[in-house]
Length: 112
Image (cartoon, rainbow, N blue to C red; front, side, top):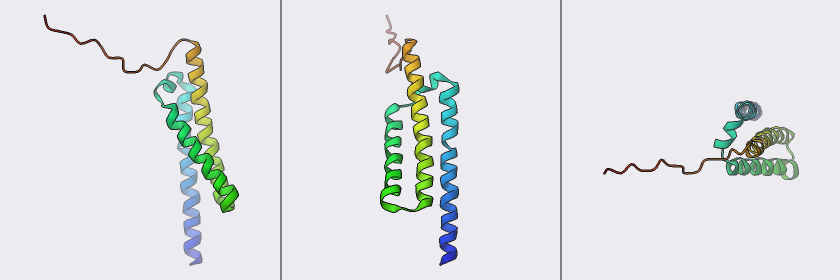
């Protein structure tokens, strides 16, 4: 049973680290390509940030497991970094007069 707990703890750590690494390409995209922020929904990032912050608070206040606290903290910071870069780039683009194009359709061509 102790071996099973050790294996599950290791897998939890490894998968948690991979999950945090998964934020890096998105952060880099927002940082290097400001227009990428136009096509990423802020509401989705706010939901994810709220979710990871709640997980961290649960780990810190209720659970108390140091591994869980550490992984949820790093995950929360990575998520908040992406949201922060997204909002920063949106703010920059707004100052330049560029906004998200919503439902812009080409006018229908009517036959004469």
